[in-house]
Length: 172
Figure 1: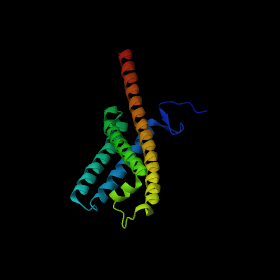
Figure 2: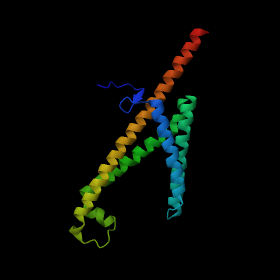
Figure 3: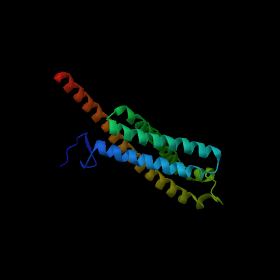
């Protein structure tokens, strides 16, 4: 039986510091790859939104790596905010796709499916919206899990800094 300890994660294989470092590296890579891809968008507003989000993702990963290096928990806030924003958008899209599952004919009309002819696309639309909803729930769980890792790392850093400052006061 594996006991839960807030300093460990991933079935007690990693320390939260290591896991947060891995997440930070993935954020940096994802932000850079997103920046390379954002100029392939169709409209100017898509390019701007994609550029801003990818720069923020890259910056969140970079500051998380810096936070691990310096053991300064304040620099984990950009990554935490990034997780909260992603979770909020994921919840919104889960809601939208669950509503679309309940009203597939309206969703098909709104989605402007080519050659919409009533009931022919309703089952396809319902199947697609259920599949997308399930995938979004998986994304939500993974985002929540990684947010928990980062917040546990932040708590660990605060505890270590308090213990270090308390021992420095005792020795002085």
